[in-house]
Image (cartoon, rainbow, N blue to C red):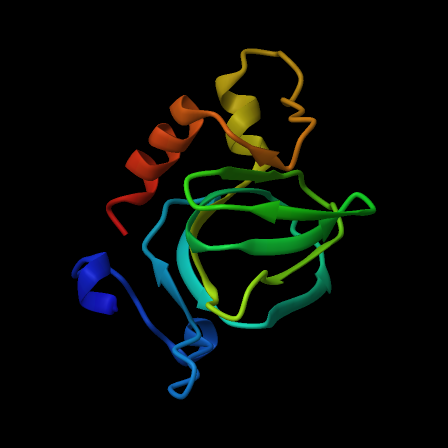
Length: 145
């Protein structure tokens, strides 16, 4: 899988979470200060409830992504975007036995503030967003993994 992501992709023990039997893994690509980009493949429950200090903005590529967020069970299908706000409790995993694959970026709120010229940080009401423009923009930003 690393070759499909490009020569810059890094796989280390701290980020690979590789399970050879299932194919589960996380591949982290070089990012900038305040930005992390990954591609992940999982089967079953991948993550227990946790929080990020960043925005988590990504696209489901294959399978069904299932997660609890703001007290509700969410599902994201291929081509749908996911937007999770900083410090929001969530879990994650595959919604079917086929597993899931997604790409996501973790974006420090300070990077957005620098671009907003004094405006407040954005709020996206729905965790799963079916917006082709957002999806295409994210895929473009995540393509050089």
